[in-house]
Amino acid sequence: QVQAVESGGGLVQAGGSLRLSCTVSGSILSLRTMGWYRQAPGKQRELVATIANDGSTNVADSVKGRLAISRDNAKNTANLQMSGLKPEDTAVYYCNAGVRTTSYQYLGVWGQGTLVTVSS
Image 1 (spheres, one colour):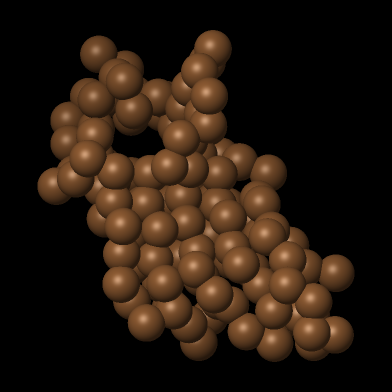
Image 2 (cartoon, one colour):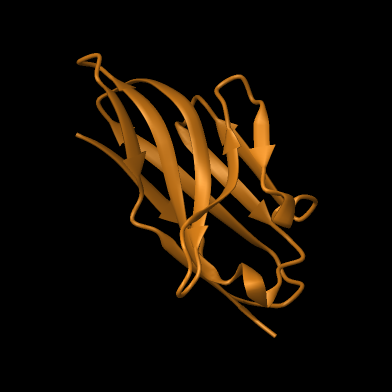
C-alpha cells in the first residue's frame, strides 16, 4: 500500500561522497517526519538524521558537518548527502517515513535498506 525505496548506496573510498535518496509511494495523504538510520555489522540500528515536514532537522553528533538531510515534499523524497566519508560510516542505510494514508491510518514505513561501504 505504501512503500519506501532507497537508492544511491555503493562503494566509495574514505573521504569520498555519496548521495542517498528515498522515495515514498502509494496511498499517501501526507508525509510527516522522514529519516535516515543505519546499521553497521554487529551493531544496533542508529539514527543518522531526521527531517520534519517543516524542514527542521535533527542530525546525530557523529555525522554532523559531514552528512546533511533534505527533502522534496512535492516528490515525497528525502535525501542524505554524505561527504567526508569514513570507514566507520560503512553500514546499511534505511529510510523511514511517517505516513498518513488516504484511509487516515498513520504508518511508520521502512525501506529495504541500501548498503554503503567506505574503504580505507
